[in-house]
Every structure is written in structure tokens, then in C-alpha cells.
Image (cartoon, rainbow, N blue to C red; front, top):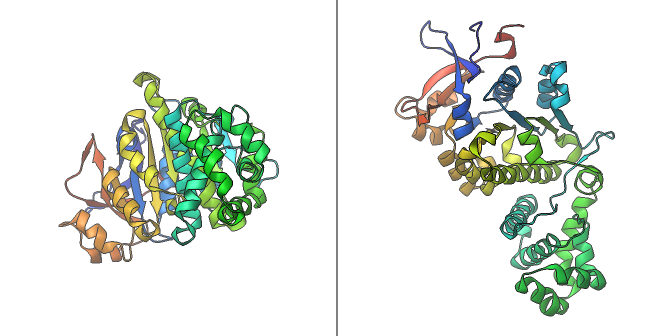
Length: 402
């Protein structure tokens, strides 16, 4: 490891060709421009690599081209290890969201006020996409989606504060519904609630009510989505170059809770990334999002944003165990959109990666990789390397002390 670390580079590996052991990394600008997919079986070094990438951001925090970052962890070990790497003088820049911590006062309301009608439509769509991921295709239906979409679009237009608690209230309380309707400028929404909705039976809306109330009955979720007073602003977190650590503790919240909360937070960051395109380029502070176990909360709209957000100086590192964690459309989108791909030892995905890395590496090569050893397709100065190459990832202990 060189004693001088170039702040423009996020170091993460050493070459392993013959006796050549040079430490290298990815230009921070390339990471921002193309994002990254990190894939491999459990226990082979994915989380360590994400930790090392985040450590580069900590080491070079405050340099002219380094911004803040967010790490979302479903298991709590990684996020705590990264927190311990942050020096005391930077702790003031940290926002630590842990829904299971009784002292955590941070909240995030997906139904926050939005003025732009187009943005409201995008928020409603992202919420629906998340619900669909949590509830699954088998329990999803056209009527359920339609009722939910109309409800979300109406509630996003009222002038007072609303939360997910207001969805059952809107559907069950006629007086409250009549209070909301005059605030929509969309005739289709007002016509639906005035003319069509009264003809619906309770059985028609029961699936919506059951699903919303069951989610809000999880205390940790309810605390963050409805009750906590200190509201997170993703735009402020990005622009203020803060370090946002999210500890989702799947063992306590459950898979559905992790998927729901993680997807909402990521969608909010993507939305904030798009909103920064209205700022002059020089005022867009760089920001990276690191996702461990990304399959739990990655949706198609989130993956598609990777290529669209290049100019906003915001991008995502996706950590995955295997591609089957993702829906077929999302798998295709992530392989098409990310600039850099890093593979640890693979199982069934070896044949898929052979197509990308051929003729340098075959599927059997991916099956037999040792722990911490990787095959890489890297974005360098905006161009994807024409040939993959091998390396071994470094650890925090490999960085020069002091």
C-alpha cells in the first residue's frame, strides 16, 4: 500500500498477476458516474469490500471532490464497523438511523409534502412498487393497486401533514374523504372518490386495509414512518455531505420491514438525486449510496436511476449474493446500467458472468475463486475495461496508519 493515497481514488484491491502486488482502486469520479455491482456468495468478502470503499470516503472526507455517503445494512454488523472507523471530529456529520433503538428520534414520512405534480406521481409509483415487492405478485391485484394509487395521489395534495395512517382513514371515513377531495386538481381523482368509490363494497377495500394496517402494526416501522418527530431530508443529507448510516436489523424488524423501509429510503435518495439536477453542476455535492444485501430493497426504478443520475453526482454500489435475488427485469437492468462489476466466488451466476468476462474467465473460474479474490470489469476514465482481470481485495489493516 502506498504511503500517499490519492484522494481521487477509492482503493480496494491488489493485483495478483505473477509477483506484481500493486494496490489500486477506482477513480471516485468513475464510481459516481457508473455505480458498481459487487456479487458473490456469503463469506467471501463482499461486506469487507463495501466497508473498504466507505473507508476511502471517510479518509478523504472534505477533499474537494469527496462528498458524504449512505450505508444501508440489513444485519447491523457492517454499519457498526463503519461507524467505529469514523474519527471523533467527523461524528458530528453522522446521522445514525436504527429503528430498533428506543432513543432513535429520526423519522421518514414517504407522504411528505411535494408541490410538483410530476414528482407526486413518481412518489406514488415508487411507494406502489415497494408495496408490490413486499406483498408479492400473488397477493397483488389491479383493483388493489388502483385504490392505493388514487389514495396516495389524493393524500399527497392535501395541505396538512399526512402519513400512512391516513390511508385507512381516507377509505373508511366519509367526512375525512370529503375534506380531502376539494384539494385535488386532478378531475380523475375527484371523480373516482365522488362517483365510483361509494359503489365499492367493504370487501373491495379490505385487502388494502389489511395490508396497510399489518405493516403499521410493526412497532419499529410505525415509529419511523409515522411517529418520530425528527424528519430526515435526503436532499439536506446529500448537500451537507453528511454520513448517513442505516441499521435495519433484519432479525428484529423482519424481511418485510427491511424491504419496506430500505426501499422507501433509497427511493427518497433517488428522488433527491433527480431534484439536484436543478442545481448548477458546481453546487451538486458528490454522494455515494452503499447497499449491502441490495436484493432485499432494490426495485427496477432504483436500478434504472443509475444511468440517469450520472450528472447529479450521486450513484449506488449494489452488494448482492446472487442475481436470483432480483426479478428478471431488474437483473437485466442492473447488468446493463452499472459501470463496474466485481465478482467474488459464484454459484449458479457463474454462467451469466462468463458471458460478460469471456474470453478471459470461464464459469469454472468463478466457481473456484478463493476468499477475497475477485474478477473485475472496471470503469476507468468513463470507459469500461475491454477485458476483465483478477485481483485480491484489501482490508482496513492494509491502509497506512495515521
